[in-house]
Image (cartoon, rainbow, N blue to C red; front, side):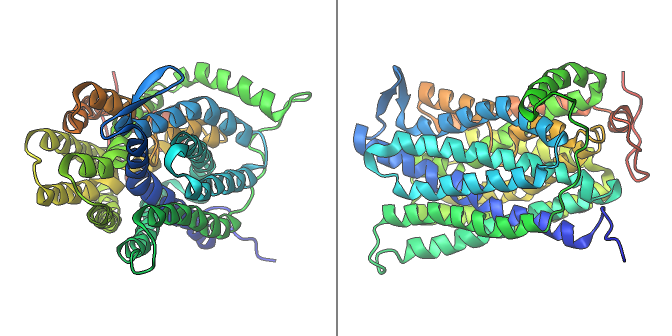
Amino acid sequence: MTTIPLINDKREIRGWMFYDFANSAFSTTVVTTFLGPYLTRIIESQVGNKGSFTLLGVPIAAESFFTYCVSLSVLLQVFILPILGAIADYSNLKKRMMLFFAVLGALCTIGLYFITGPLYVLGGLMFILANVAFGASIVFYNAYLPEIASEDQRDKVSSRGWALGYIGGGLLLLLNLILYQFSEKLGLDGALAVRISLASAGVWWLVFGYFAIKQLRERGAQRQLPAGETYLKVGFKQLSQTLREIRKYPMTLRYLIAYLLYNDAVQTVIVVSALFGAQELGMDSSSLILVVLMVQFMAFFGALLFGVIAGKVGAKRAIVISLLIWSGIAVWAQLSLQSVPEFWLLAALVAIVLGGTQALSRSLFSQMIPREREAEFFSFYEISDKGTSWLGTLIFGLVTQWTGSMRTAIFSLIVLFVSGLVLLLTVNVPLAIREAGNEVPENLEVEPAAA
């Protein structure tokens, strides 16, 4: 009987990549395109244009509510995801937990269909739960990468996964654009079309995610559960131990902090882009959907392009190039972005660097973590991944509320881009890989010894 290899198996890799195709509908349709402007509009229908409301004694501007929801959901992930990652390493539940959270997130997303008028706070709560579940499923998804792909294949597999995700998110968004454009002819008002679009992302995630996860194999526990311990108890203990032991991997820790800074800014740009176009440039929903569609399909090629660049100059240098471009984007948005055509041009530039930054960051990190602790370490990484940001969205929301200008809020993100870039430049990648007990790939760039 022929044994199917446990690594570089084409069928399992295709299934793994296809989950990106499934879950990207949530990031694209819900987080990036529809929910932010929709929640803002229904709040303003209750409190007035540019109005605010009080929640638990705290005044909240209508246009800042969605970004605060994103921040809160990611803060919850900070406490929840590391526990789940540790549990995954001690159990053989990785596949089942990934499926559970995918189903939970998809069902909460479908529930957004019922959010109207005065139910905007409930809508925010449902989104928070969906985004936490989304992040939880991605912890297990990312932890599969070092188990299914060898070191020399991870940049390629990760980049193709991101690229396939852009295709999946873009296809559903295209269908939703058609629905929105012809909503009147179908007897639907604009708000109902948006609610159907939000729910469709949940259905897409549920159906395609199920078939993708089925292709993955459940590995055995990475480590044995100590006698007398429960998964939850050992999860909390492991979190405490990880926070202490991560100092044994100083270069990995330095890289992780750099990533959390710069990618938080990347995710903030993704989250607020549709809201920015609507509020600052007066773009209608159809135009914004077209922009996001363009970004999705261009990002597909951008992810593949940066995969090629990484093959020539190394993943770290490719990420540095992308961060220099991101910093220029923040400056452009503040100083000269005045028209809709400029917004399209800026979005095209974002698309080129978007997939490359994220895909290469993931594959590079997978080489810097100790074996048998992948889920545990990826749980910290997931604190800032697809559509999730807490510091950047908090900064954006506060600056918007204080200055009344989203343009200034976008510019404020340059602090995160530059600080992440500077810290990344100090990371010695081969040393980080050796510190984690892994072999340095032959094609990795040679770097001088770190101070």
